[in-house]
Structures are given as structure tokens and as C-alpha cells.
Image 1 (spheres, rainbow, N blue to C red):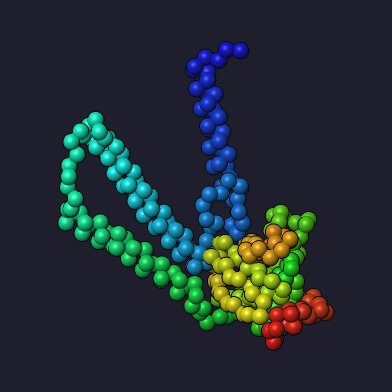
Image 2 (cartoon, rainbow, N blue to C red):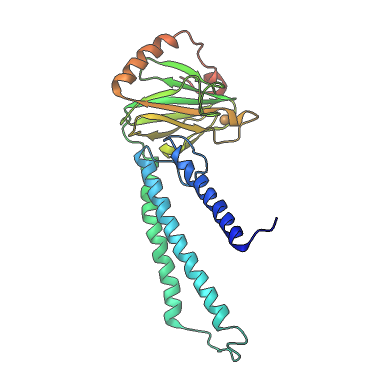
Length: 279
Ligand SMILES: [Cu+2]
């Protein structure tokens, strides 16, 4: 079958539009706290730290885009104006004080512009504010255990749930926290190094045997938030997701009461002896 030029371009246009719909369509299914198909941006922020990370990412992307376009424009100018045909007798200039001062000072100013918010963000992430609740997350091959020393000292295991959605992210027992409260997360590893990470919280911290690391988050929106172990830890590294359910204060209190009973008989973890951490 012969296809005319007009038909061909119409088909190509249709194909392109289908592609755009596919890419754009991903956001229609986007839920907070988990990745979406065809997502190319950061996950929606659910904590002040992640809001800052998103803003900083935007700033860096703007700066690098402008620099790239500027360098591209210079390259094009050189290619067009100074090739052998257009410019047969090259200039022998080797110095230009104004230009040299400018190409030293401007990059310095750009770096300072980046450094100031960068350090501010680092301090925000690393400086744990006064915590309302402390939760200990222990990475094990291959699941997480959560201990609530402030709320009845219970501890439970959180394993990937095969029958729940979202696939590879849902767990049987989620970590539950109240909304708008500062949660301090202390991490350790029972066997090898794992890493506790939730993209929409802007949190990623190694869980290392024999060592207690800490980070914090303050979730400002109720909902389910998912992450994955982010340190290669063995064959089921991809199958030890992290799921955090953010609820209201009342719901949290009710959950704590239930959890105290539900997990009262659970065997205490072996991490203390394995990791050499005393409880
Ligand atoms: Cu792991």
C-alpha cells in the first residue's frame, strides 16, 4: 500500500500525540507517596525537608540549563564565525583582562548562590529538632522491624505483602505515625548494611550493624508513603519495602492501643545481640 506524504505526516503526528498522552497520562494515576508510571519529576513532597529539596533541585536545574544554553551559544558562535572559511586570518590575541576577571568572578558568584541554600538544606536535614516520637527502624535480611520505645515499647516486623497493592511496596504491618509531629527515626542493621528511605519525605539513612544513625521527618499530609531499602543488602534487597502510614492524632492513639496488644506476644528482635546494641 502506498502512503502519501500527507497521510504519513498525519500518522506520525498521531503517534507523537499518543506518546504525549502516555507520558502525560502517568500523572493522572499519580498518588502521593509512591512512584507513578512515566514519572520524570521528584515525588510530591510531604515534609518541609522534601519541599526544600524540591525547591533546591529546581534552582540547580535552572542554573545548569542556563549554563548549558550559554556554552552551546558560544560553541555555535565559534563554529559559525571563526571557521577557516569565514575567518581566514585568525587574530593572535592571547589576553583580555576584563574577560578573564569576568570568567573568574561569575562562576564564583554562581557557586556562592548554590552554596548558601545547599548548606541551609544540609543543616535542616541533619539537625534533628526536638522529637515528639522516636521510632527505631532495624534493617534485617530482608525486612524491617519497627520499635516504639515512647509508646509502650512494642516492636513488630514489617514484611513485603505479596497480595496487596502497590506491588513491591505494600507491607503487612506499616509503620504508623501521627501527622504534623516531629518523628525521630533511629536506624540500625541486624546483619548487613541496609538503608531506610522514603522519597516523598526526603529521607535516606543507612542502617548499619553496631551503630545507631538518626534522622527525622515531619509529615504534613495524612496518607500512605512508600520507600525501599536503598543499600544493596543481598538477594531480597528489592523486596524489603518501607511503608509509612501518616494518620491523625486520634487514629494514632487508637493504633498504639491496638498495636500494644497485637504485638505484645511478638518475639523480641534478635538485633540487639546481633548488632551489639544494648536496649
Ligand atoms: Cu536491605
